[in-house]
Length: 423
Ligand code: ARJ
Image (cartoon, rainbow, N blue to C red; front, side):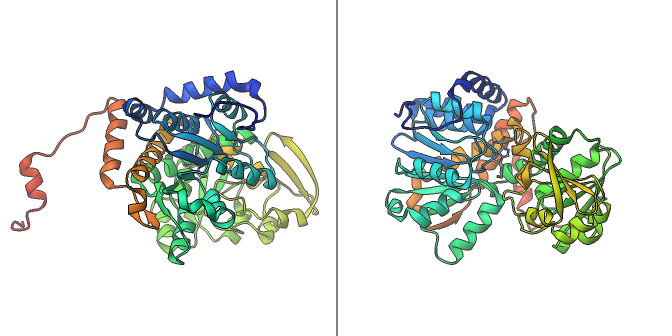
């Protein structure tokens, strides 16, 4: 097992470790599913012999996952998957606990890839991604590692889309489990997690009143829907923009006004992009926005708001508060960009609450277990976790909340599949 030396980690400030440990302990007290898995597997150590390289936001919740992987016997090396999402205190605590962690807040692109490369020095048997940057790095610059890699997992929608495209082109060289596609991930993390943490990020960065504001959500997928639902609850007038007819129809029937962005741009006070697509807000939109509009993104990549376009209209900028920059345009209007257009929920707040990450990361843990058991057998390509696992995870979660549910009787079970009876 590795120990913390200056040669196997790089963090901002090791003296923050005590603060980081408190944060991680706090998260552990709210992540009963993952803690149950830890307790179950720390004795048998089914991940012994596995070297797991992870590239996922370094938060207190991720630290609970890392500790659990380690308790189950794995050797773990880690980097953050976004330059602005690392919690330095958590990174320091992990370094002290012997994790090969290379992560600090405010990395530039070169440091970001340098960190990934350091975590690959351990020659992983398993990779764990959020956004697929690690898998891309292995494929593009470290093909010699394929031989030793059993498989990988992917946390988020955007990453899964890209990996499916890669698999369709026959370019994905090992099995990858789409953790995002587990119901106990996307139907909770993406909706309730994003809903709460995105508003949390906006409020920490601005402290604006949401009641009575026109809040535009670009993209009415699971994340957009979560933001819309919570913003509505706080009294905002929510407007959604979409490109997909069924999603626009859902928004409409859920009481959310749908407009084309060209129109929404003129009405919005606060904008959240949640599309996974680039150039959702471009020059012509900034051109028509109100003075004082607040603009932010909660999608995985920072390409949804075209900041270069905004800059081309800008005469001066001021950093008003943490994660909030004022752009004064040539006609005097001011537009406020949060967290440089990067994921506002992780850059300006703490990401999704521990309670919801509990289920997402229980799925990550199970994905590592499944790969360790039968990885190569799965074959190259994108795979899903078995449905029974969703029910198990949800069952443990309910139990931890003291909520009981009913069971079908034998008669009900046979009724469900009985096609001899009609009305
Ligand atoms: C770690 C987090 C947190 C958090 O599961 C979420 C997802 O799909 C991501 C897209 O990058 C972010 C990830 N996420 C949200 N909150 N990861 N810790 N607290």
